[in-house]
Structures are given as C-alpha cells and as structure tokens.
Image (cartoon, helix red, strand yellow):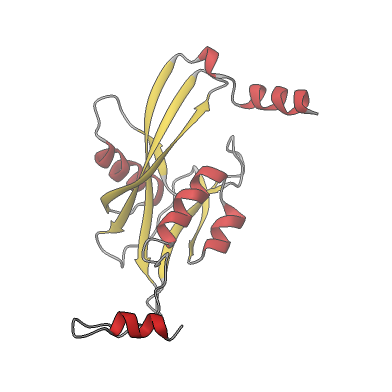
Length: 183
C-alpha cells in the first residue's frame, strides 16, 4: 500500500530530486466584515477543466522574477477576482513541489483587505465560483491541508488561547495569600 501512495505522489507532484527551478508564490487571505461583524474570508473555485478541477482555494499565483510578494499578490488577486486589495502582514508560508517535480514553490500568504468593500468580484476563466466563508469548519471541508492551516490561523488570530480566572488582586495587603487560602 505504501508503494502505491508513493507512486501516486511521485507521478502527481514528483520528488525533490528533479527540481529545476524555484518560484515565489503570493497567497491572499482576503478578509472582510460580515453583516453581523463576523470575519469572512474569500475562497474561489477552480474551473472544471483546470488541472485541479473544482478545487477551492484562496487567490494566489506565481510571482514574476523581479516582482516583490505584495505586488505579486495585488496583481494575482486583480487577475483572478477583479478586486483591488492591500496586503497587510505575512501570516505564514508553505512549500510544495509542482510540475511533476520540476518546480519547488514557496507560497507567502498575506492577510489582505479590500481597498473598497463594495467592489464586485469578477472571476477570471481560471475560476468558476466564489464564496465567503466564516468558520474553521468550512475551511476544514473545502481546502487542501496547507491552505486550510493558514486560514485556520487567520480565523483564530483574535482568539485568546489561555483564559485566566477573575482574581480581583490589588497591591494592598495579602489578597493573593487570602485567595490562595480559599482554595
């Protein structure tokens, strides 16, 4: 069974032994506020005749050799969705091998905001649909692993990881010792 999977992956994406070029890719996590102040992220669906047919992703694309990542993201988003965006900060990166092992890409994923939230989405021929998602569950169901990890990170940016109990401590007296004694 392991050999079957290995053969499949080497056929689909190749191995690092054959890499001929390295490419930077810009990924745009476009966020807007929903009607109930919830955080929404844009996903676009690849065309049915694409090499990854019907796959959902956030806008992204290869950078030209002399192009910086933020300019690449702005160009790719405009080409794929018709939107004007402003990349704000890097969320994370991921690497992948493509073109049957001939190309290694590093995708730089930036949190982006639309310059005007009233813009209309105009998909390129590379994509057939779009949707605004608002939950980790939707990301889990729709995206490939690397993009899913990035989008989950974005949805959780403002979540507090640790919750501390209310303690009403002050600088006067032995309130900490009193509180500890009450446990």
